[in-house]
Image (cartoon, rainbow, N blue to C red; front, side):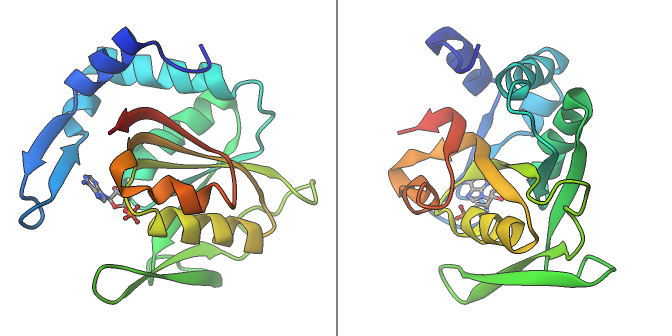
Length: 184
Ligand code: AMP
């Protein structure tokens, strides 16, 4: 089960709620809290991700602040690998490296601890995960950070890709991209 069939995708999609005009007019927010509270759907999704990634020989999963933590941490536990949080600027207590990226207006910044991927391997395999890719700015900055911190970003995984925004196109220049659900 490396990828889901259409019935399974429709099932998971049916558990995600669309909130119109949030956080501002014109945006349809994909609310994954309805998936999370549905233990069958959440378990089904984690089963799928575990099945897909169990043969990747990963060393770490890096989750993007904050909804990437919700999927990344239990998946890391299932796969028996470490979990690394990639956080918004100013949240991590130890020495960090950071990467800025542009938003519609202005900039944002993500950070990771400088020793986040230090282990017995010189280039540990890292899976990057977030709930959703929109323009791709956050994920591209996070993938850059993984590399700067010494990790080998083997894939970026999203539960949802807003494909019409083409955020995955730039990211694919950095790493392979897998999205469980595509919104056309
Ligand atoms: P981007 O950098 O544009 O790819 O934005 C991705 C980040 O913003 C992810 O961490 C998402 O959780 C969040 N995000 C952006 N657009 C949406 C949306 N329509 N629904 C839910 N989350 C979103």
